[in-house]
Length: 409
Image 1 (spheres, rainbow, N blue to C red):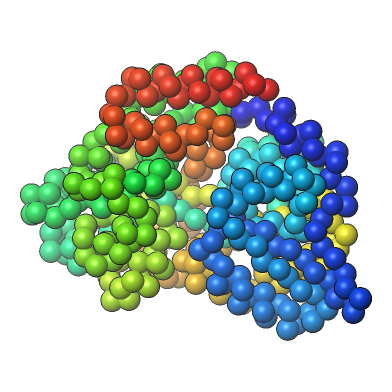
Image 2 (cartoon, rainbow, N blue to C red):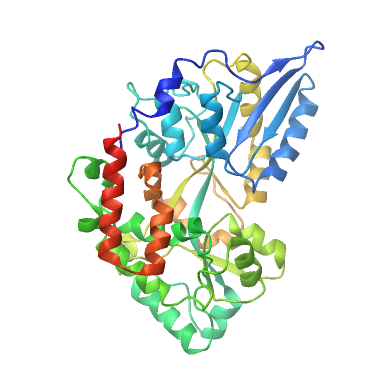
């Protein structure tokens, strides 16, 4: 687990007393700001907020979901201008905020009793706060998937693979048939993290980040196979692998370019919006030749958190309770092709059927990059590696940048 104690959040935590941006108007109406770090779900939130406000006419929820949300949130923390509620991912940002002591602890609230234990453990691993706690309510989860064009799979005469060798055989066959095996969109660095996390999530040592901080692990020692397999996958891209971004990639794949698309479940509704007739399926990337060792990389995509010192905790609680109602959670997960964080509740979208077994059997593992120090800029270093393909230099650079960040604190 990487050290975050010296981060600016710790410095600012003591200043955050009753700093929430809510207000009560003269008419008694309470305004709550919901800050989200996702832009893809704005429409869904707006629809649900409208329903909530009809039910609670004395509460107005203002949704704010800006681009570069995490940067903006950190700036607002410094300015003592935090929102009432957060809808953020279970990533390093969550750990920083939790460690800063500004978030409400939901450990004894009863709201997390039905959450899948694996996701609570992921959140716990992100914090160093003692005693531990759960500083948000996991709501929706996501998954790194291999999205495939079913019609093209049928034309190639192949089925979703269970092993790495079978996966490569499909890519070879697609190439031989003149298809683009994988439609990469690596113009944007973040898209390169999908495959990276899928491979590393199954191959890195357990508790890699903690071991790395204790000088018991390193990229040069433990990520050789990860880097090699990423270089292998890059051989199956197209001639504009580094010239196409996410939106253009969605349009291209939805219109029949490429057999496989390495993206998260969040891309599914966007692909189907472009081409509603597209016949899609998904499967976890098989990273090893042992099917039982190939887990699905999944994490908390949305958790709801409230500020410890919020002036309107009851109204914030009402909103979270509303979002957790079965009907509303189903609307969210259906529209976002997401997965409920609740134990025993599964997404029934047939497109996502290829990964349902992983959720049912608990065969999931977390996103490795959620535990990398944010300051190393991993996605940019990894994009540089994809372009330059200098494995040893890249792995050494990852180690060096990690250690530089650690020495700052």
